[in-house]
Every structure is written in C-alpha cells, then in structure tokens.
Length: 392
Image (tube, rainbow, N blue to C red; front, side, top):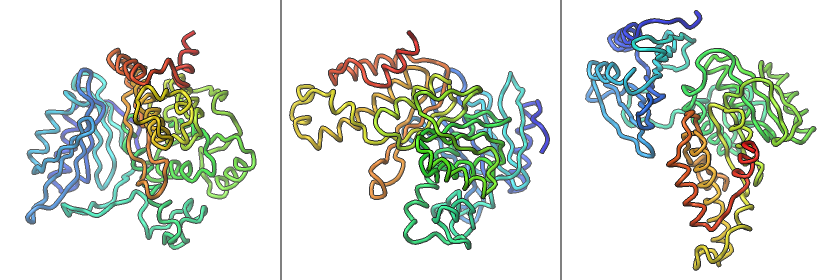
C-alpha cells in the first residue's frame, strides 16, 4: 500500500461518492470531534429497506445513540457537511481498500490507504451479532489457547470466553481512529496474565487492520511470561513480546499509544492508570478488579442506611471507585466512559474504563470530582495520590 499523502478534502469526498455510486461503500466512521464540538461519533453501515439499498447512520452523543436511515445522496450531503466542520477524522471501508482521512488544515487531509478489513456486509436492517472473529473461521491464537478447534469451531465450554474476546476487540476497534493513523502502534498491557486478550489485540491490529505494532505484555510471574513468549514465538506474532515487570516501576523509552490493564488487582489499576497518564497515552483501557481501598475509607456516616450493610457497602465502594477514577481522568484531560465489558453472568468484573486523551484538562470535571469526594467524605484515594506525586 502507498504511503500516506496530502490531498484535498474534495478528493476524499469524491472517493466516497464513487463508492456510493457503485454500491461499494461498506461503512463510514466520522470521529475526532473538532475543537469546540461536543463528544460524538458517526457510524454508517449499508442496509436494505423495501428492496432498496440505504445507509443507517448511528450518531453517538454522550451515552445516547440516535439512528437515521438515508439514501446515498443524502448520506453524501451529510458527510460533506460534517467532515471538516464537526469531525477531523473519516474512515471509509470499501471492497478494494480502507481509506483514512485526517484533516490537517482547512480543506486539506492526510489520506492513508490500507488493505481492506471488512467483508461484504449483511444488508438486513435487524442484523444478527457480527463478531470481528467469527465462529467457523479458524483463528490460530484461539486454537492455541483452546477456545477453538483447528476447524474454527468454538468449544462449548469456552463460548463465554469467545464472546469476551470479541467484546474486548469491539472496544479496541472502536477507538482505533483515536490512535496514530500511520507508523508503529505501541501498546503496553499491564498484568497480562495468560494473555488471551493480549493475543486477541495483536490479531486485531496486525491481521485484521494491517498495522505494525510493538506490544509488550507485562506480568510479575516469570513462568507465565515464559509460557506466553513461547506461544507468541510458535504463532509467529511479530511485534509482540512479554516481559517480567511491575506496573508501578516500569519505564519505556518511546511513546505509548494504547495502555491496557485488565483485572489488575485493587490499587494496581490505579498504578497502571497513573503510568498511562504519565506517558500521555492516547487511549487507556482498564478493566478493574477487586476494589478494596475505598471500602476501608468510606465512613458509614457518609450514607447512613446504605453503608451500614456490608455487602451493599462493598458493591457501592466498587462503583464509587470507578466513578472517582473516571472523574479524575477527565479532570487531567481524558474523555472517559465507563461501559459494560461483558454480561454479569459471565464475570463479575464487568466494567471497563475507556479514556481518550483530549489534551484539554477540564476545570468543570475537576469540580465534579471534588464534589464527589466531598459527598463521600474522602480526602484522596490511590490514583489521586499517584498523580499528585508526579506534580510534586
């Protein structure tokens, strides 16, 4: 594929028009809101309505999503209006290639052409679940870790794991437009453990999205690291390596674009978040685990009638911990969401923090964070102490 090049905004819109005219538009995503715009994102997919090809536009605004069905001409008009005015990034998925356009100055974009990543879409309006790694297609790393048979059949005992892998990849794929569009993507996975999601991340970025990567899986257990490294070598996973190391003390010599911490226990999640902020990572993904700190800090008098019950206090403390973490990340310049990672029936560790760097610390978010602390009668907690230490 050719290197990225500068071209006019009109040239990209002409690519879109041509793909729509040929019924060869398999999807469009507009992301990266322009300065001053509210956080939002547009996702477009083709559908068939009353025997005619149309396009379903989904616009996410905060926690809400709005849908609109448009014909090709109306979609072209909408994207022409929004790209460059409301959004700085556009991704067009076509049969021959994926095209990414990033506005670099007025009416000029940097256009990147990559190998196609999407197969022909199902055009039904109410489509079934479409996984990034579909069942029935052999996937080497899933076979290696025992989730799939060599023929691509998901083993009955591992259906939940299969869904969890795909759910995680959906979250990562959703934020790819926030990462650098060219060059090597640098990823640190703290507390990688057996690393099935680390291998999934490598598969998504390299096999499905055609990116060069440098992914480091970090864990304290030397035996686990050795086993994962051996699997990576057997599978020929270029750009993936595993190291023994501690979250809090790990140093890196280059930029970190994506920081991942999945099920880091208690304040280890805070240490991973603090490292990611310190490195100014573009995207942070964290699935917290066993939040104990706040349980010992909360006074029963803060919310009488609730915190006097042990089980309720434990669950409330876990939720309050994630609210504090999300609020503090927003205060230091990240657009943050707390989303459900997987259904509760599959795992109790079902919340995921997803944060995208905006480079614009928010005084309003800082005020909300301080108000929440006052409501909880807290002076500080682990993440705040770690970030304060960096400022001292």
